[in-house]
Length: 104
Image (cartoon, rainbow, N blue to C red):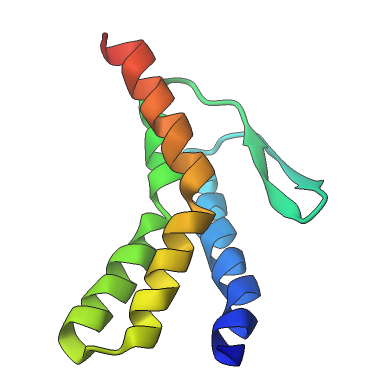
């Protein structure tokens, strides 16, 4: 369990790095924010598609970890993928909100 706890900051860093790469890909203006223990980016998007892409990009981590689990049955990879889903909860809720607002 100590390895899992030590992995949380690295997982969070990789998650935010992927957000940053997607923001830079769209050449968007962004601002780094720190609110207590929560860190992230505030950005202005031209449309909801850009937001959805930027918000879902870190799910590459979840998919990679799930594939690693399926190929190796490594429970550590499964635990990290579940942890990453928990880290991504806010992104997923906002994506659902945008989809409901813009597609209906």
